[in-house]
Length: 629
Image 1 (cartoon, rainbow, N blue to C red):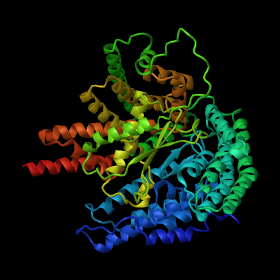
Image 2 (image 1 turned 60 degrees about the vertical axis):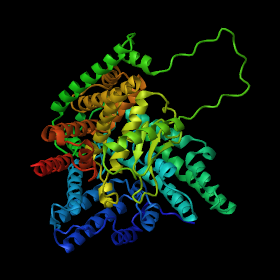
Image 3 (image 1 turned 45 degrees about the horizontal axis):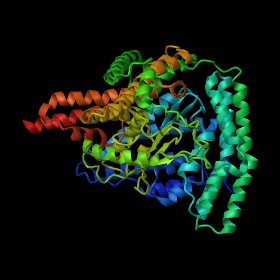
Image 4 (image 1 turned 180 degrees about the vertical axis):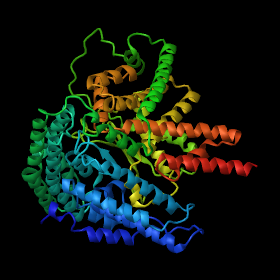
């Protein structure tokens, strides 16, 4: 059996386009206003854009859970083209799509299709401004200065896709798994070439990020073949009743051969390249060192925040917020009479269990090793409790899909975030999922619980559960709105703090306050690293001392900020925008203000630029005032 290589990437493009165009993700629209033909044309146009985006980035089909099984099956055999030629081609395609967007006949302002159009057009324009710099990654959902970094690239993203997203429940799905596995080597090689070419042009990840890439490539490329996760995961699927012993053995043998002859050598070449580039790479992080780096930072920040912002003013606001949050935590520690050591020592004393007492009489050695306990049941129970209190914060979310916890494969835990969220499938066939590092998931750790709340209830999962039109056009789901999505997650921590204040759980409150403090401190470090030339060591020390986190966590967060300029600030911008809109609405409406209705106005239309959110809220409270007169 043969599987497609990179030269076959576009072979299925016509089929994918045709299927998606025929099977629109959105209804025609029931609005009485405007021409039905205009609504039909706009619906078809947005569906066409989504089909083109999926054809360019087929991995999206599995990530967003496209409901059409034929389209998803076709896309699941391909990987995204990550070559320099694809980067340049995608910009030409995007410019052509912007031209088509500008020429489109628009439906009335009051229709949902018009809002979809406005959101999509804004996303294309933001992406084009980033892509114009000619380096890094620039898609509707990404704006990163480096071709790959320690958290992204085919060498990590494709294994994650195969291990945790793509299913293998039939022979055709097993063939699709093998097809992607075969393409993985080409994808790694494409990005390795881009990494070298960018470095020769003066655009190289700093030395600490290259070292992390090198370590990741070593882990994925030097694992013994018979226990390699990309093989054992497939074998786990093949052990099910849907496969005969003969088919299972044949498929596993094919996977073993692909890994040995293609994939593992590609990882070895990437590791050697990352090691070689460290010799001339910058020692300190920050895009300020790149050509037009300061302008790139402002452009990337506008991409993520979905509005123009002034970094210096934002830094001052974040500093005020960080100081206030730290003082609030200190007050909690004082009230608990925990006053030994520096700030982070005091937090550790408050949240970590005490050291067990040493018994006076030595116990006999255990005859069997103790079994490690899994934190997942306790965390699932916490999530159920959070849901019961959070559903009252927004209207009509009682029937929302649930959220499941998935422990990351051990091969990925050293490199991926402690927590990451994936929304429920469009057709609700799969729940939302939170991928977590089981090693870091400590029951009773209030900071970890707070971060989990930001991803589930009342955080990102509540945000997606509250969308009034779950089957939005695929092109909208292909776009990122960091300011909105991460901003809501940060704002959700404030909502959780308010709930906690009514219950009086001081330990949980410290965790919530600390998570919010980390967000503010990260925004400060984001600006300092990329604009103010703050050294890596100083940034790590600032995060550890200010937010009360350990050195390893501060290091990981600093390197994440180094690789993703603007994201931490955008989360803070979004959180501040939601806070400001709430305060403004409460002031305008006074006793007519309803918190659940306000949150519904924020969330029901889905992620979108913050300026559009502001306009929606203003229309809402103006209408409430008119009804009250």
